[in-house]
Length: 305
Length: 223
Image 1 (cartoon, each protein chain N blue to C red):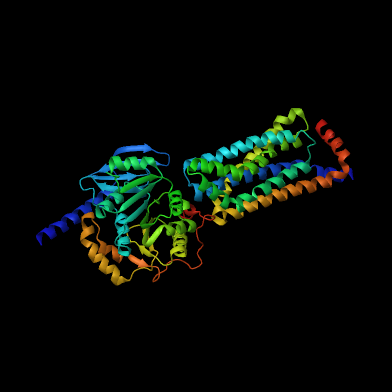
Image 2: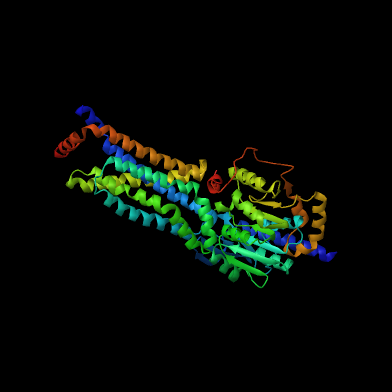
C-alpha cells in the first residue's frame, strides 16, 4: 500500500516537473541543431527533459520529448491519447507509424508488443538520424524505418495488398500540414490498408475551419469516429476503425485489462477512455461542410483563420 | 473608312500585351497547381518541385526557340491567336487525363524523382512549349522600329512577367481556397482559347484595309 502511495507521489511530482519544463523555455540548452531538406531540427534539453523541435520561435512545435533518465515514460498527452487505439483493437500485430518524430512511440510500442512488427515512415532522413542519436530510437528485426513520403508509402502498400492492425498518422504539427495526407482519397487508401480489426489513429492540430472539413472528410470515409481530446490541448486524436466502434462496456473492460501494462509508460488508460467521444453521439461540425479531396485541399490556408 | 480602321488599329498593341499578360498568368498558375496534381502520386518532397520547375524551364526554352522561328514566316495576329487556341487545348489533358497517366507512371517507376519528372514531362511539356512561343512572337508583332526593339521587348517582358507574378499569388492564395484544381485549369484553358479567338476576330476586322495598315504603321513610326 505504501509502495503504491510513493509511486503515486513520484508520478505526480514528475508530472509537475514535466509540465514546468514544457512551459518555461528560457534556459533550455540546445544540444543539437541542423537544417534539413525540409525544416530546422533542434534538440533542446532542460532539467533532464530532452525535446525535439522543428522550429525555433514557435512554442507549439515540440515534436517529441523524452526524460533522459526515464526514456520509456511518455511525456506528451497526445502520445498517451494515441493508446486509446488499444481500446478499439487490443492486440495489434502489424503497426504502421507515419511521421517518426523522436521515435518514442515506436520504442514504447516495441516494449509493449515485442512480437509486433512496427514500420515507421518518415519523409526526412535527418529526423531519423536525430531520433537514433538523441532519443534512443532503435530498429531491429521487428522495428524498421522507411524514408518515404507517407502518401507514396501508403499507395505502394495498397498495391502490395499489405494490411495493418494499427495505423498511426502523426505527420501533422502545429506549423505545417502535409495537405495530401488530409484528403478523402488518402483516407480511402489508408482504409484499404486496415486489417479486419484494424484501427486508425490520427493526431491532428486542426482549429476552426480546418476542424470542420477534416471531421467531415474522415466521416465520409470511415463513418462515425471517436474524438479523443482533453480540453488542455489544441490537438485531438481521431480514432476510427473498419468495424463499428465498440460499446462503452467493452471499452471499460479493455481499459481495465490494459491498466497495468500501460502504467510504466505513464499512460492512464482509464482516464484516456473518458476523453473518447463518438461522433455518433455528438457531431460538432455543420452537416453541409465541404470535404477535402485531392482536387480541393487548402488545409494550411483553412487552418490560418 | 481608313479613320475607323485606324481606331481599331490602335487597339492592336494593347491587345497583344493583354494576351501576353494572360499567358504569363496562366503559365505560373498551371505550374503552381502542378505541385498539387503530382502530390497524390509522387508526394510533396523537394524533388517534386525540382521536376516541375525543370520541365517548365526546359519547355519554355524550346518554346522561345520555336516561337522565334515561327515568327519569321508571314507573322500575323491570326497565327498569334492560333497559338493561344492550341495552348488552351493542350492544357486540357492536365485536367482530364492526368489521373490514369500518373497512375501508369507510378506503377512503372518506383523512384519518385524520375516518376515525377516523367509525369511532369507528359503533362506539361507540350502546353508549356506552346505557351513559350508567345513571347518571341509578340515581339515580332510589336516591333516596328529597330531602335525601339529593346524597349518594346522590355515592356513585353514586364507585362508578361507581371502576369506570371499575379498568376502565382492569386492561384496560391485564393483560387485553391475556392475552387477545385481541375476547374481552375479548365478556366485557364478557356481564357486562352477565348483570347486566341478574340485576336483572330480582331485580325478579321482589320482585314479589308490590309494595305492601309502597313502605310499607316509606317506613318506612325516616322513620327
